[in-house]
Length: 154
Image 1 (cartoon, rainbow, N blue to C red):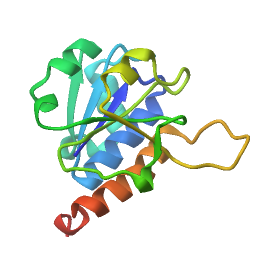
Image 2: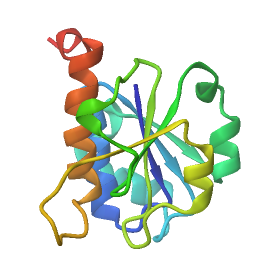
Image 3: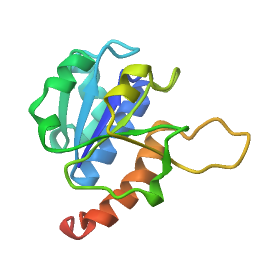
Image 4: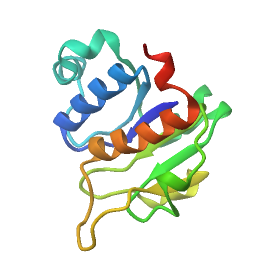
């Protein structure tokens, strides 16, 4: 299972995603351009002391992300506020890549078109969305439970 961020806007969210993916033993894919300068130094600063424990792949564009070998073995699952089904009702697979849109603008049409599935996190009425990394943690919890990934961490 992999986590992907599409053109992240907020460096602190990227840092939190790096920490989350490192702690859960997942690969993280960052699709550029980002809403901030993503230099090697900035990436190292965002990662704090988790950078050497994280498996991070940077893609120069969404086209490069789609062409990567990792897309061959699994589905692209879009996590979005208007996803087709609740994440609890979705059957996750070990080869899935969970992709999240931009914090400021959500997911553009190209993400919806490329995704083989879309899921949502149910929320209280009238609220816009969870923080992108909070949503990732919620959905990953269920995806990892379904695929037995938690047992592999200890």
